[in-house]
Amino acid sequence: MHIHLCRPDITEKEIEAVTEVLRSPDLSLGPRLGQFERAFARYLGRERAVAVSSGTSGLFLSLLALGIGEGDEVITTPFTFIASATSIMMTGARPVFVDIDPVSLNLDPLCMEEAMTERTKAVLPVEVFGNPAGFDRICEIAQQRNLPVLEDSCEALGSALHGRKAGTFGRASVFGFYPNKQITTGEGGMIVTDDDALADLCVSLRNQGRGASGGWLAHERLGYNFRLSDINCALGLVQLSRLTEMKAKRRRVAGWYQELLADDDRLVVPVEQPGCEVSWFVFVVRLADRFGVEQRDTLLERMNRQGIQVSNYFPPAHLQPFLAERFGHRQGHFPRAEAASERTLALPFHTHLTQDEVAIVCGVLKGLLDAG
Image (cartoon, rainbow, N blue to C red; front, side, top):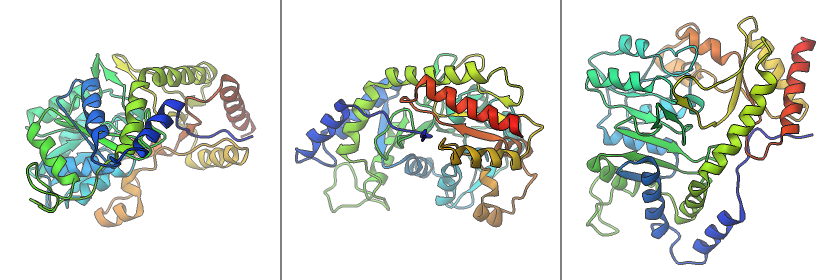
């Protein structure tokens, strides 16, 4: 038995679209790039979209375009994939972590206010596991302090809060297209914004600092090669056209898990909070508070050994060794994030999962909990 943690959903349409580009002379900076950007912006109702090589590069370029640099502080969450923090560090700024809401697992707005100083130049909240809960309040507080919000929507394509789509809350927002996401381009990301100046700067920064009117060897500023090829964009165009279909498939799988696990008091099972429409990125359960990290790690090891891929989403970012050493973080600094991290169990989750496979996963999980 082998049940994958994640798998992309690729059909013949995607293969044909990629093959068509491979048969053309335009493998990069061709027509698919603009087509993908325009389609993505239309989907979100935003003015501009800038395709980049990854969600990480998108966060980094957006921070640069916001003027973030040496000596600045950017507030973010410790309960996230590491790129939310390292993209801040890449600018020379410092990630200032604040603890999380114990229900949504997103950045706690009250803690955010307490962490603000004269060096705070932006807020980088994350829609953890695709959940946008609390983002209206986060943006309200940031606006009161005249701080830009860079919305890390890398896990949230298709989610919404009170009908407002994830990716439309920040001055800029960033999506990721790694193969475990709601749509994939293999590798890739997208910056979205209504700010033309910010978008134009990101276009230049992703393309070696070239300007709009300059030649191939004319460089107006320090830039990077963070372009997304037409091969990736062709894949992304088809995937975006199938987003509604794939969201429905993922929602169905989430429903199967909820049905089989909701009545087990040893687990905290994710559900949509009031006003939230979650586009399911992963399905992460948590062990109840009476369990500890040792029991969670034992479950991870035993389930993986039985051919069921599971993982610990996410280890606390502030306790990653290089971050802890650089900024002096230690266990106990953000107790709610740490408590959640010690008990999380990401179960297999993708559109190819069958109801029988979900039943097997749940049966094995419950059996191991029964066995102690």
